[in-house]
Image (cartoon, rainbow, N blue to C red):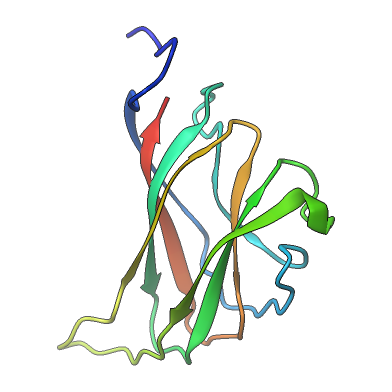
Length: 140
């Protein structure tokens, strides 16, 4: 299948996810400990990826927190100038149950993550069971 030479629409689906995040990072500039959810060239595509949304799912009982999503230009995230805060959403306290669903949250993004960039996440407070973040979109 030929690659899109001038992408307007994505060529194929794109789903990537983070590892479980439990640790707090109080830095609001993208520095410190971050977890990468997706990269712009995750499948070797030079045109980047379209990130439609992030789905946040708790992995068990957690206190309330906040997730901060950062676009990183592919350089070290330890330099604040390499990171841009693109969204932050309050995560509710959740309790694991075997008879009721835990709350999941969809965070709409709708932007192109360039091939050299990373999409990173941090939590504002430490949580017990953790959260996992899934990027859904398309590849160019």
